[in-house]
Length: 464
Length: 103
Image 1 (cartoon, each protein chain N blue to C red):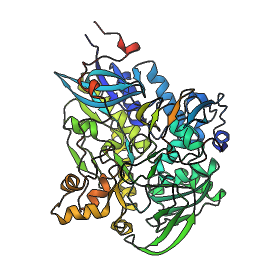
Image 2 (tube, chains in turn yellow, red):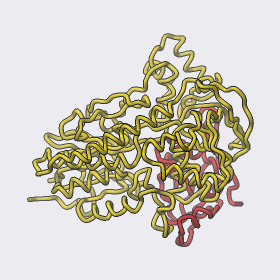
Image 3 (cartoon, each protein chain N blue to C red):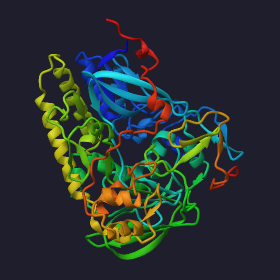
């Protein structure tokens, strides 16, 4: 007989760890599952122990606080790292979390719990442009992950481009770590220090910190500019930087030599698991589908909670607050004496309002579609060029799903995670919530295998 | 390319070697094969099915599947998620782009 936990938390980032800790402090029997080898999610990604980094916090704000939460959680909950979740479902009154343990010799494992907190975060939202599939072009988050998690510089001479406040820590981190950052090209307006949305978000210290690092390394921060093409034979050698008008149409261009481009146009919340369970979704201010939650971070499915970027992209501080609210709600719903915390709720409202300010300040404007040529790949996996998308539309495909069926964008390995936003924009839709019954690659044998509980401490069946 | 070590005051354990098409590439314990290759200047390690285009790291966090690689004969592993082990043999079928073996 498999042990049934009170609460399974998926995701060891700031939302998941705060939620798991709060719930376990309130008396719940908690298990936390994450695919990575180390806790932190994307934001608190840290180097492997083999690096013995004495000051990993140099690359993060708030890492010490997160680490204290993690250490406190270790004593109270079962923590299953290196467990990739590929499906969640129901087994009677309980939820099943189906995982693959390990990064190559994968073993199927299943965790069972009465409640489920989904804190699976988000990934970068790239838009396509000519040359975006050249080696050396990375997402901003990818460059950041290489630095924070692997202590590898994405390149020697790096261009940072896209939109949003995330470009600042990426550029500052790369510059501080020794890369030559030729510039940060923010496609929306460049806000002066006094008007910067980060100030409105109460993050003045953070914004000034990045500005100081960029100034020290003489990295220019330019508004209304974008990388509209990447060039090179087998790897990136230079990019075309365009000055943009208000709608992001290029007004003039110049060439910048570089070996690496780190770019991003916001984030896509990872909704595979909540959609598998039938949780209701809505469109957030940035056009992304997100999980609909109530004031307690409860989704539309009883017993299922969501926190962090899955409920709307808002950053690590908001994610932690949401995790704590979700942990309290999960405990209260299972009968633990947890009173509502109005201070926490007000904090969430305030941080979520700031997140909306940032979404409004850094929208993706329609002009990027004009950067594409007929032969520009829209879908990297299936190598679908813009012309094939247009042909599908000419054949009568009026929505993203029909375009996908006719021209195959989003049918490849990544299942539309990279091109879904772009394809939706090209057909004039908001991106739909993803329908992916299998969230991670899984062997057919594992798909058919009977469920097994995880190894380690938690493998001991609870028989009481 | 060791500057990040200074920033976080890293004192890494001794590197071990993996091989990419027979050429040695160093890796720190805990590093992924994708990070080790990228750090060694190898920017691509497969070509696409239709256009034969070179691909390496793009999203870096296991989402885009561009960095698929064959390790010790096991195909289609995400290089950005696969932790390197001493002696790992990476076979790109000659697709590795960059200064393999000669940094």
